Amino acid sequence: MTAELVLLPVKELDLVYREWQWPFAHEHRNKIDAHFAEARRAKPEMFNGQILMARDPVVAGDTFSARYFQTDFASFLAWRDWGFPDASVFNGFGMGALRTSDGAFVLGEMGQHTANAGKIYFPAGTPDLNDLRGDAVDIPGSVMRETAEEVGLTPDDYRAADHWDVVQAGSLTAMIRILDLAVPGDAVRARIEASLAEQDDQELSAIHLVRSVSDFTETMPAYIRAFLAAKL
Image 1 (cartoon, rainbow, N blue to C red):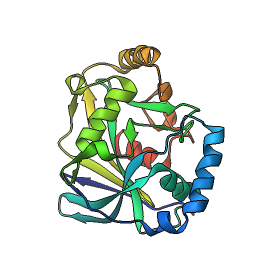
Image 2: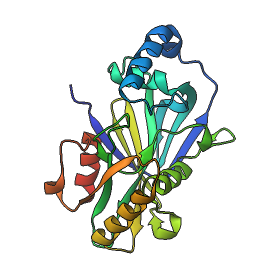
Image 3: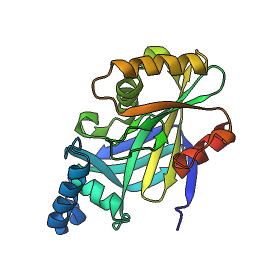
């Protein structure tokens, strides 16, 4: 069954960290570890670091809020690969929707060594401990960091929108902020490709420009296509 997609514009994100032990990660520890070991045999570059997942999402007025907790990537991967068996939690992450001066959106294709190989979407990453500011989860900072790491663009290169589009799709929630560039699409793609060529450990294997729904592919997740369809 395809998850229902909900797109909500909000002005504020109220995301807080709370200590909490995820029952799924504890109860299935041995199976999770075995699953991750098998995944690493196929993709040795995978690293079982600590990440942040979320629960208790609420949209009230112009604010999206949720509570985050710490877990390991292996538990997240098993939860994802096994079809999201615990529906009480979700993967809540930020994305930078790069939009060029001639109206194209810029998306990256994930490399074959990554956990999302072949998928095409905006610069993004599941938040981790580096995104904590006290007990606040800094999704705007996560978006800036991921955009710089993945495509080599910094806040000096774009103007960030003053609102977020929260796209809820089953067990994931993407908090998408449009980042407007003052440069046309082909020039942006050339600059990013040059940046990728200089990276020692690049996540992306290709850059795609989307100007209309005719540019959509099946390797773009449904929530990305829903967001783009509303913006193009």
